[in-house]
Amino acid sequence: MKIEQSELKNLTGVITLTIEPADYQEEVNKQLKEVRHKAQMPGFRPGMVPAGLVKKMYGKGILADVLNKKVGESLQKHIEDNKLQILGDPLPNEESPKIDLDSEDTFTFTFDIAVAPEFDAKLNGKNKLTEYEIEVTDEMVNNQVNSYAARFGEYEQADEVAEGDIVKGLAKQADGEIVKENAILNPGYMKQKTQQKKFIGAKKGETVTFNPAKAFESEVEVSSLLGITKEQAQDLKSDFTFEIQEITRHKDAKIDSELFTKVYGENAPKDEDEFRAKVKAEIEANMAEDSKYKFGLDAKEAIMKKMEKLEFPVDFLKRWVLATNEKMTQEELDKDFDKMLEELKWHLAKDQLMKEYNVNVEKEDVETYAKEVARMQFMQYGLMHVDDQYLTNYANEMLKQDNQLRGIVERVAENKIYEALKGVAKIEKKKISHADFGKLF
Figure 1 (tube, rainbow, N blue to C red):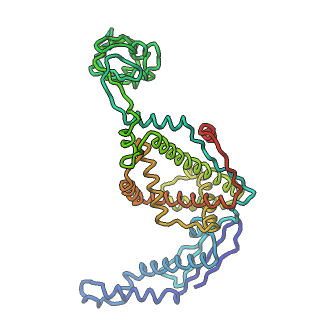
Figure 2 (cartoon, one colour):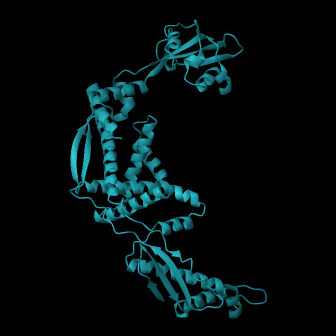
Figure 3 (tube, rainbow, N blue to C red):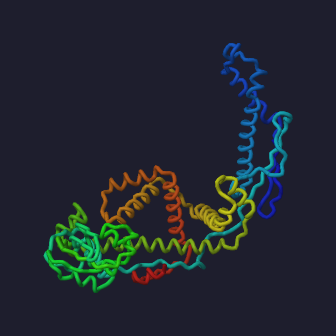
């Protein structure tokens, strides 16, 4: 087999493979014999079908398979031997003549290739990055403690409406036919204070006259309150009476051992000081993750700045994207190509840095990060302290999904790269308030 590569120009080149009978005939004959031994045709005993008939029926397909395998293996070996950093995949040259399996025995395959430009994504002491230490204040601790007290509080019935209460009753249109039993509203959510004040201080059994259109922000809220369509709510202007039948008030939990156990389970703190200390440690851990996230954003920005002036073989890349994404249109490609190119730059930079800093992603790293992702997802729903075994099971289910697995592996690799950069870039440690940290985004 003969393999030739043209000189690279503008990061593109051509690889030509010439395959002669000596390169493939032995494998083709071997497979034809195997097919003949298994072939069953009317009029012939099993395994006794004439070789010429087997070749006529199956020869072209077997030859095509053998050639495809030879071409793929040879291309891959050539790329590896010559240490080519290929972009995408080799594409069949559009100007090459078609292969004729019937009349030829020597075949020439021509492929267009594109390679990555030379670049250096590594940072050094001239690159300055900031590692933020977000200060955790007593106010932040108090807010979290109060949040726990509210979350584990209880609802009780009241006789007089106070701010924050939920009111249930009978709503009737003053000059119309709309009637809604068991209507529920929260005066605290009313946009107009004059409407809100009509309810505050009202007692159970009393009737309040108010205007829903003035009280609430949108027709969606009005339609939900009165059980009417959004279109009806849009045109609604009239007053309503509201007979108060039930007042429900939320009462925060006491900050005591019962709350500590509800929040932390068996390992609950023994007293309030220990509880607040544990809450503070939790906030500090979360702030450290936020700081780590910001450091990653800044590090990536510094790396990508070193990649921004690189020139790429755009025509080849667009052709490759269309060839490998049959459903993508030229219009969609043109719209998204700049973003794709940025992702390609980051992919190349990341590969280089992983080799430079000996970054390896181990199974344990992936499992640990998946558990952290699971923990953060539960926290979004107010579940702060999920059992470790449950987190593990949830994480394992995530890792069974290919997209989730790939994403987590990428995040782990990136985090390891960012951590390695702390040993090579110039790092400034800076204390910052939570409010000022938020402004950085």
